[in-house]
Image (cartoon, rainbow, N blue to C red; front, side):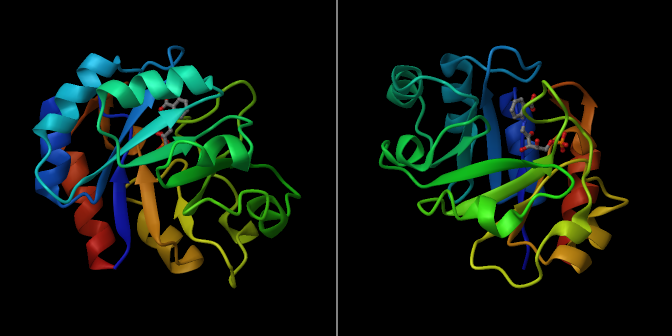
Length: 204
Ligand SMILES: O=C(O)c1ccccc1NCC(=O)[C@H](O)[C@H](O)COP(=O)(O)O
């Protein structure tokens, strides 16, 4: 069964809609330049609204150690997700599982890249767009993903109800991650789109 993470949640009601539709995880963006950025106070309210067994993931982009720790002081996150140039040693120091997001460019050797984060519990592959570290709504060339992998793939980037089945058939990820594909507007999720997306994933 392929897991689903609904990313870029900014409102408790969207987190609940994701959980009720069967999401395994939600993502909270702690990156002030993102339209989906949430304060630690809002994030804490969102996590509190979640029923049990739905994982809360915190996203950071080259935040300092102190910034990550100050979020962790307020928000009971289960997993961290790093979208910048954070090395493995930085990502591991918080005592939580982490995922490293890699933005895929033509010609990348994805096995070699993934090997640079041996402490990661998952490698999230996303599209590369200059100057935008994530949530671009764009996809990359899924045929670049190695069929045999020693790392755990979380597939992201431009996924939506009309392409997620093809993506899963091709890449066989552990999980898929979607943000823009289930939105009514930036940071505002559409419960019908969330439901349709998760139904499609679970149908595969
Ligand atoms: O969503 C953002 O604005 C964002 C900003 C900075 C780093 C990461 C960000 N989002 C990450 C995600 O939402 C997903 O992991 C992924 O990029 C998929 O997004 P989408 O292509 O919109 O489905």
